[in-house]
Length: 405
Image 1 (cartoon, rainbow, N blue to C red):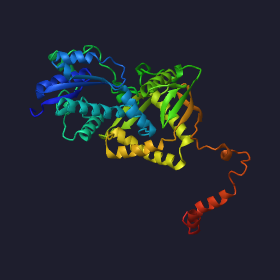
Image 2 (cartoon, rainbow, N blue to C red; image 1 turned 180 degrees about the horizontal axis):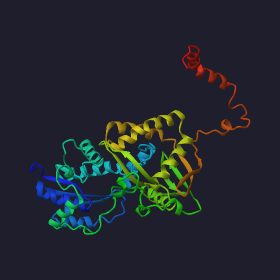
Image 3 (cartoon, helix red, strand yellow; image 1 turned 45 degrees about the vertical axis):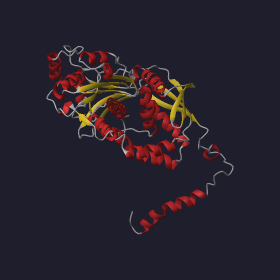
Image 4 (cartoon, rainbow, N blue to C red; image 1 turned 120 degrees about the horizontal axis):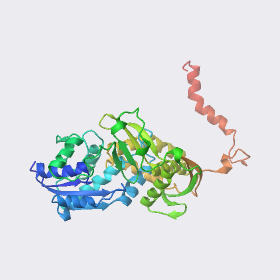
């Protein structure tokens, strides 16, 4: 293990990564750099600095960075231009955070001269794949240390015992076991484990952090207007906002109206099924509104091609291939399609529902003179439809004549 000289650890300051920090010192005997990313998880991150200092990490080797704007601008917004949703339900809140963490972790490794990176993802989940595919794509010669695949501390009890033995402070370590494993960022908060490992068990109402239940949501709807430019929301109710501010505002409004809860059994990339619950209020609004804006401004075949490719794009994000050439290729096509996706969508939020109440755009392809059921003054000759139908029926008519129905 002595071939590793310096490692950059993705460090939250919680139980797992605090144990990993000490374990790396004991097992690898290498210099450690800690990296803590603020992606909008809503936790105080400065205590991580004190914990790192306590275990001898040099001040210049402690990185705590606010990445919220970059996260939404360069990762969340591009993903929503694709209308990405995994297996029909999951809005990819955890998945889309990992490539940014990997990117910044590798940048810090280059900056500090580290030859390895380390993370706290377990050997059963998707995150190990996402972190490591990103690291290898960005720095092919990097060494990766995945403690959960190396050590024998494979339970919370063993982790707590290790922490006790080495004087690692863990808040509430003698209290009751937390019922859920949670991950949060500006796009979502996820809940896994505990009682939810049984797919038949309904999650307790007290579990949800960001949203009220639809039953308890206000009896009056909230109407908002979302302004789009090149497929991204740039203003809410006429107020220009940064990407992170847009998502923060939509999370608040959606949460107040019971929007964005999901209870999913998904297929992990490593092969097993996993049950998780998610709160994605802002993302739920964004997906519905973006599709409404595209319905007005995108050519039919462009829209259908995007829909055909979306599951492939979503799977690439879910499985950790954000930095792959195929995802970049798809992104170029998607971003090009968004040039006309400009205008305003009016959305009604009501008891868990996102209701489209209007859309308008200077780039609209909707022509009321053609679409009307009234006299269209010759804009469309209905007689032409007969030949169109016969030509499209030709192959089926031939098959029927040959007895192949």
